Length: 83
Image 1 (tube, rainbow, N blue to C red):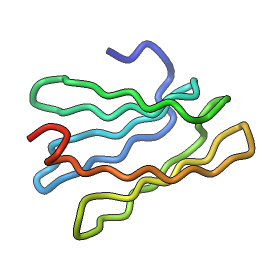
Image 2: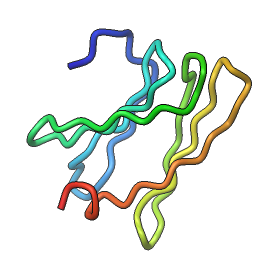
Image 3: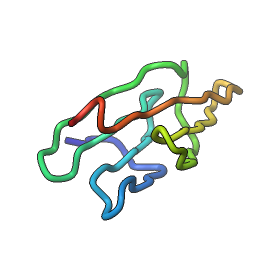
Image 4: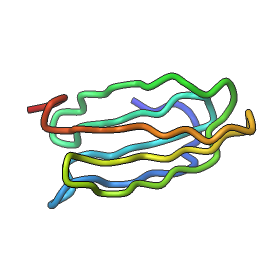
């Protein structure tokens, strides 16, 4: 469940099966839409302001930028994580 203001969200998969979200905190959240299973990724030290996703052959490359003046790259192989 999300209790913070959602700042950005991207839907992944075809048809969309996952939501990647950032809110008013430093954590990135990946949610499997049909079950609500959630993974939390920690890396930023302040609020994530935006995110983008690039589809690759092996999964997704996720980019985030934060109030901590950092840009981070995250790799997501969704089949390995959620089956």
